[in-house]
Length: 390
Ligand code: GAF
View 1 (cartoon, rainbow, N blue to C red):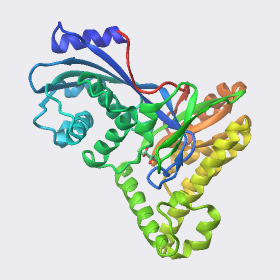
View 2: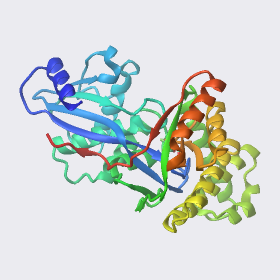
View 3: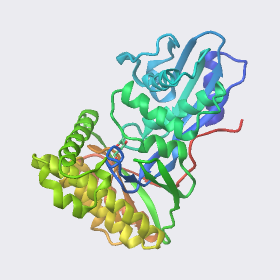
View 4: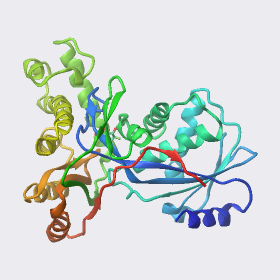
């Protein structure tokens, strides 16, 4: 694939000069959903699927972008003097946003680049294709301009800043962090309040992680996501009248039950309940994994889905069908929606000897009920973003 990308690059932008290559992965979150903007814990891992970038420096201030995934847009030309979002600029607003965020922090970009992108994460599937593009741009800039003082955690934070303030989605730090900091065969247990993290080996004994793509994306994704965040922020302010906390992640379930009536609206109360309970579930799930109790880990995944479906209301019919089918199958340890929600993917832990049957029978039943195919990926956990050897 790299040879082909190199040829496309030279065909589009001409030959000569040094072309460097980079990769940033997508992620799957095992548990800890919608906790990352509530000061809670998350437990994602980087995938081996991700976004590749080929880059050649220019002497002027021109930026040229091309994505093999958005071929029909052709080469998009802009410049370092136009680091503002434009609707028609489509996907290029992501790399531009990261450039804007570097400049904002005083990291001056003094010349342009020709960039070619190709990704093998299905777009809009909740596996963080946009975060991987942000992190990819971050490592390209760090390397190209020699910003050694920018750590990989900074790359993640800069990516989140660009997503929040350039591209208008108020996401938390989980996706960019997983893409920047991932480690092969490990998940990252991250406290999003302090950014303290620990790598936990994902040893599932006789089971595998399987992602199922529902291949639906409901259009309210960004707006409903921002609404959930707003509801949690309002609930936090109400709770702060009753108890001294900085984030919802500071509360145990018992403390929440004691003070929940400070939250006036019942819907907001459900949202906050999810944030508090999911955080505690995540802490417990990581403990279970460390104790080799994969069964308990799976049960907590199932409970996570129930809470996301009923209290946080970020699931949808197609995803619930997939999860119900999975949870009913012998050999499935646990199954839940993963990522922001309103479509996208589920993540399941499936016993090795059941994986083929899982794909076959859930594939058929889903097609029958929904009218289109699902897609399945048996996950390999990969490393975080990096420059590739030529
Ligand atoms: C999306 C966001 F980008 C993350 O920050 C996180 O909130 C996730 O939804 C839900 O856990 O992927």
